[in-house]
Image 1 (tube, rainbow, N blue to C red):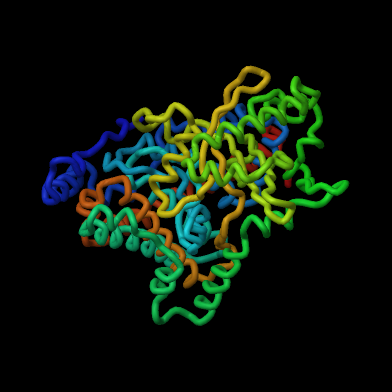
Image 2 (cartoon, one colour; image 1 turned 180 degrees about the vertical axis):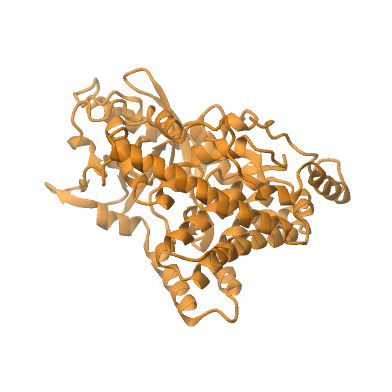
Length: 488
């Protein structure tokens, strides 16, 4: 295991010149060209064991769905294999230029979102693995995802390299931009819709501009009201979450033992003291207590809503099997909905390889990391810990289900469109890192040349090869029955 990242001499008493000198000095310990190398060591953890270790803490009946989704393609496997890559990065030399990391910065975790002021922004969306660590871990995670997604599209090696070079160059150049900015200007920076339009090159194909505008319009339509129409129905005169098992299972439809320990409970649905099932009371308590983590004005806003229904929800790829609950709340009437998602937060996959985190509650860790990295966050973002009737504690974070979310479709992108998207991701990641790290030291380390860019293009190809080998071993284990997988 590599030495845990330590805080570099930071913004404190050092001058900008001293911070830049520190960043350049790191090159003598870890040259930028050294990032090109990836060779799994003899002590590399067995990838299937890493996955099985994660699954041991998840809802047993949902684990085959997780594996079924990872089986669909090497890219989907990569999305679910953040723990495997964390082990690979954690055992290798690193810069110790520390910033708050997303921890899973693959290309699909960048998307269009709504700001509290109802502006459309482009930002990182997933923070389940967030922790402080070396800045390059996020950049490498993004770079490898671009190559793996591009291979799925049949793009040749030269085209794949151009995607990584575009992303890393955008990261490097924007970090240089931030290194010359005032601290508050960095904090207020965001990538809103107007900035996204300016980032489109003048030579951009007409189709790219058209698809970009269409994606923005579609994202604005993906809100609570749209989700409400799709996910609920009227039953006996009351609005309820519509079942879509096993992906969405209302509480009333969960059989005893269907979830071994849902939300910290043991899954029993018999009546509990005070009325309602034990599980229902646990979830109502979660929502009531989570509200205390919101700022007072948002806690007041949440108080205008009442819980109407709850359901278990299957989410994502790597997250499948974690306990996740969809909560329907109604305001003045049935046409005034709020959909919240309460998702279990476990230990970050980065935790074994970095300094101990400051948050004992994993839900608070996720929320704090998101608030630090995102330029504009969900107004209902908060956390809570609940103790179930089995006596086990579980941490959760809560957010809105949909709030103007626009998700990329790399499976339909042309090389030109994917290059544009890669650049947006790289620039957005630099903004997120500059908020918590030292942009002067990082920019000085990266320098003005493309040495780091070219190194990561080489690394991304090598890691995509490793991901393919891991995927092939995983697929073989599924096919011979060693690992259960289910399509859903």
